Amino acid sequence: MKGDLNIYVCAACRGHIVTRDRDEGTTPMFVACRATPLCKGTMQSSMYRVFDQTMAEGFEWYRPLPLERAALSESLQHHVSLGGLLLRKVTTPAPLAAPPAAEDRLNAGGAA
Image (cartoon, rainbow, N blue to C red; front, side, top):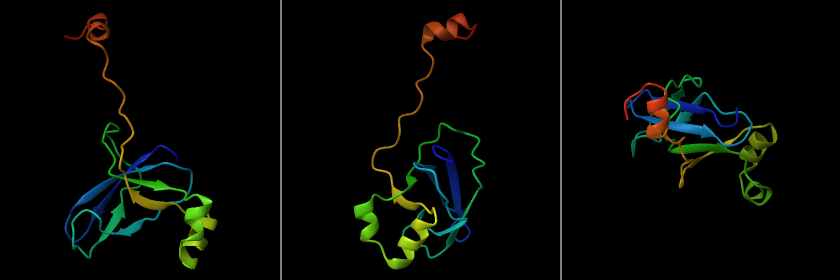
């Protein structure tokens, strides 16, 4: 779902990536490893079981714009036409929620 975080873990190198769905659409269960350069392994989705929702994503699933879509291979165009999203590296991660101000923590009974 749009905005959701997911983690993909590689069976070969045990590396992982954090992804965010920028758009509504379908994401795959398996992708080629992107955690470790030169790794030929396959990463598997954690099925959106991400308990720390403050994690910063390194990749995002997105729906390509019409001009981008026209430049895709026929098989990727078909994938997108069926609701599939594409994966890209994030250049500017979405901002995380700001922590509560010291005054708010004091009012809630916490330490400043």
